[in-house]
Amino acid sequence: MEELDSFFATHDYLISHVEVPIRRKLMDEIDWKDRMIAVKGGRGVGKTDFLLSYAQQLREQSPKNKKETLYVNFNNFYFTEHSLYEFAGKFVKAGGKTLILDQLFKYPNWSKELRDCYFHYTTLRMVFTASPLMKLDDGNPDIGHIVKVYNLRGYSFREYLNLQTHANLPSYSLEQILQNHEQIARSVCSKVKPLWYFNEYLKQGYYPYREVNRDFSETLLKTMNMMLEVDILLIKQIDVAYLSRIRKLLYKMMQDAPCALNISDIAEEINTSRATIMNYIKCLKDARLLNLLYAAGKDFPMKPSKVYLQNPNLCFAQPTTTSSPRAVAETFFYSALHGSHKINIADNATFLVNQKMKVDVFETKPEHDVFRYTAVADIEIGKDKLIPLWLFGFLY
Image 1 (cartoon, rainbow, N blue to C red):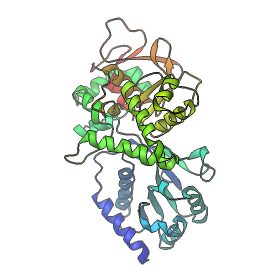
Image 2: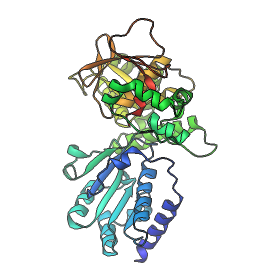
Image 3: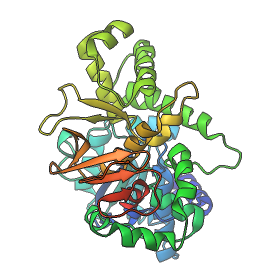
Image 4: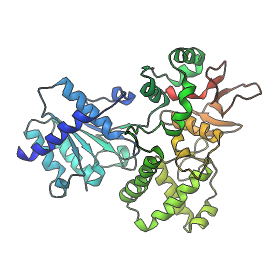
């Protein structure tokens, strides 16, 4: 159909020009046979490139069936007058099998039409990018029972090392790291020198920005502002008049984190209510700008015990704020583990992992003996329960 030709032309151009320097671990964790898949992730972590690389992979597997897969970006004004359901029907009629949908949150009634497509076009698979603020799973009555949700995070330290060195280093489970960290560290260090790269990763390795001459700090600030102005305001339908308050709150968190929250003082400083502050904190957490640390058994809407920035790069995003080395180390540890493990605040330790194991995090090797697991930023190879912090970046 002529109507689809321009979409296929764009698709062909994009997959022929996408450059994915390393294979993301998530690519092999998704069950691609599922008929509705959401790839959720914070802005800037590479969701679009991830799905374009998947489309590229499908093309390589079936080069003669060029019209079976189609990438569609809902920034296209075509969808101001045409429905997703209508478009999917034309695609299926033309022999299409896999629709890859980007920026879907900008389309009204997206979840209802996804559901209609799922039940009416039974040969069609749909894969779409999702903002972390979109309601999926049990939170969405339209598709919660049929969508499979996967989380794409920024580069792990392992992925960053592989990008920089082409070493093809494998990932390890938390149990493997705790039990065999000396052997694993020696194996890694025989191929690369992780501490040569670790500080650079902490500053600008989480986000996969690759453009030549691109200023990382400026790009990250633009990404953060897009999180506030588009992801939070648009998806959560918050009036733009309140944007300055959210920005002020985030700036305060960037100055103070990791920190406890004094809700009353912040509410007075920003001139809003305590309840609104907690809602804004939750929005910033959902947008992948903050992490909230609770005591075991507690969660939102209760006040967190501590607030962290979501990943260590954010500690360096604002030149006028300076995070301590200890704060950066703790932020890295929390960011590396929280995607697959339960992290809580601990008595007399930095973190409680999976509600059973206390872990301390330090920027330098402590002078005293350690009797529990201790992650240290400035060591290359550990011993007994003393583990190099960088190794926790090998979990994915």
